[in-house]
Length: 453
Image (cartoon, rainbow, N blue to C red; front, side):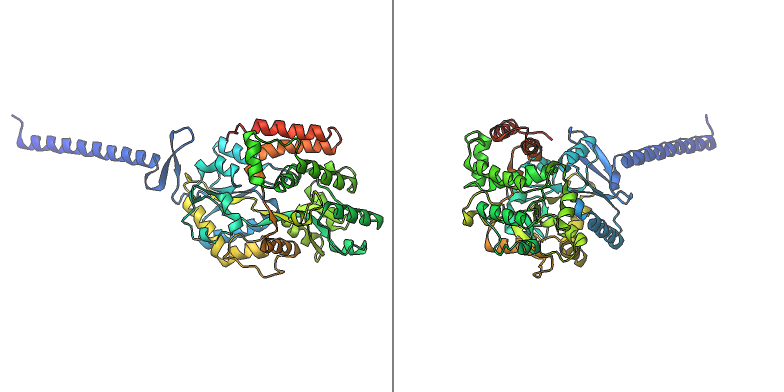
């Protein structure tokens, strides 16, 4: 028989062995829990349906913001630096600058797995494209403050998915000093009036137009939008063309719209297809032309290049119906949205709340970026944002607005960029009117079948 002491020693050894095993198992479980995210991790379903894990917690993971507006990059960088200092939340800001195609670059990042936490999405068709990735922001405090004009594009099934960056508008920006020099007392609002003004400017030795037709978005988004926006019922017309019950060819408004393009070419600079955005704005600021097709976002650059420039907006008329032509195209270019599966989504929503409510956020919108607020809670005194914003707000108040529509096109900017190529071919003289509109119809027919992420 084993001695009592031997038995007790044996039991202690067994218990010690069990304790070691238990500790080992606990360590393995701890490692496993940590690997799976534990308390500091978030589990979510990936695009392919596989469970993935990202570390959230206080790991130093920055809030990733992908900005589409290069003209406010400097101001937004300063704002995010201030936010980091106030909150301790690190921010990684990246701007799609120069000739970058934001929509295409955003798709590339999603496909590569480099999804930003906070980014921009346009409304309607673009919202449909990205909806599955977006956090529902309906309960955010700023949601009730969205201007009515900015609300429909970011809503779907009663939910709000984005905070509008700003109200913006475009038309022909004109130099009032040069108009007065040419003896033009009444700003033109019809096509005949615009032609008469161009003739008068040219007779005074002033070039009427500076055309930035090297930029696809100037053509495919903004200039082309005019032909859609001036239809009797623009949204219905787009639905009909999308369903195949209406055509872009043989449309009287599109025919008249080409008259407007021809007018800008006849009285514009040589080689407009070689003039990009920056060159266009610089030449206009220097007084080399009296008009340019651009928007309220140019105020920042113009203030730097030519402080105190006396400017305003003219509509972009395609006929002589002054009541219908005297309108500006006003809307929201893009909306702040939050990636719903992001481990930083709460930080992203907190940043938007701070942007909408803090004095620093309001200062960024009004004083730094010189944006027209799309939230009712951010008031703007007259003259604070400059003459371009004053004209936009005046047209809004009078109800003289035309909608932004390319966000409704099937294919969104994938379609408008293709259509802009054909517009450049027309401007360059490679194709004529009938061919241009036929190409538009071909592109539209292809796009209306849908497009993939």
